[in-house]
Image 1 (cartoon, rainbow, N blue to C red):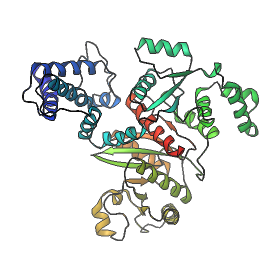
Image 2 (tube, rainbow, N blue to C red):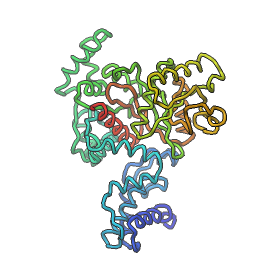
Image 3 (cartoon, one colour):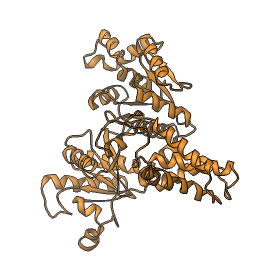
Image 4 (cartoon, rainbow, N blue to C red):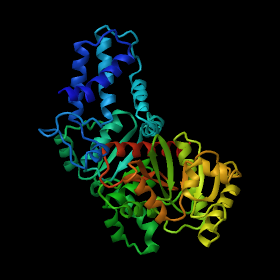
Length: 440
């Protein structure tokens, strides 16, 4: 019991007490902390916490009755509860009036990862864009949808059998007010969507009968909802493989005007810093032109999170010291970027440590346009990009937000298979921000 107090009680009770300048810590404040911990223990445990404890499933019961010490949510559950109790019992000298802002301040104490997520969520709040979830029969999706409505981030559209989804909602006691449930096979849009898909793909081997079959598939139906304006964005991939999600999007929604190829980006959060990695998921061997496009899209993505991009085009070579076709391709990409976006801070080709370790640039390459660390890292091919983000994620214990699909005509994003509820909410918020930008 003493250790529980030391790691789950005192630090967060003191935080709440200090933030309202409480004159004392009374029993009501201690009880408020206890009730907050009890409530949190019954919530679904994030994947990040499960990973920290060896991947063992944590679910409320005899083996898990209190939150784990490494659960970052303890701060935002306990401290506000204690602060409120202090105010209600008259011992607070500095009352809190804006609880949302207070929670944001607490999140900022947890580091860059929470700040990055907060930017997207704050930009998304209030617009209530319609986000379609093809995997509407998954409990994590339903729990994420509940948060999206509660926080006024988005209006969720859930695809699947209505009876099945409602049964899950009732079983897991999910507040479904604000949900829209659509069964692709019994929907007023179905015939219209079949006709549209047939017209899109009839010269690519699709017959009308096949179009009917495809429109019964949730990922195809969801992508068509986005194309036809019946949804503003789509989030999928919790239970399906990456190609099964991206293929319908490319066939139906296609790329944004002026963009030749879509690409994938991960935001890697490590040691209180954010790095944008691209392309990590789509293009196997991009050309110089492709790399330039990827870099420009990644820089725009960084700006979306209020981060001024400094783009490093990566290679095994530093500024021409190993002239091979592979490195020359990257150097050519830099030239193309400077022609298209002359104000963008970009340089290369350069090695990875040159990009992120300032003394190398300062001492050996003082002419480089990047000063300090680069924060957007563009990899020369999919091998390097995919390997780099996964090594940093798994061995370096970095947080990874993504994959963020860049260059689509409308917001469509792919979830990591098996990701947690917070990840789904974050990706939906990113889709909403993009939808708002596209509507301008």
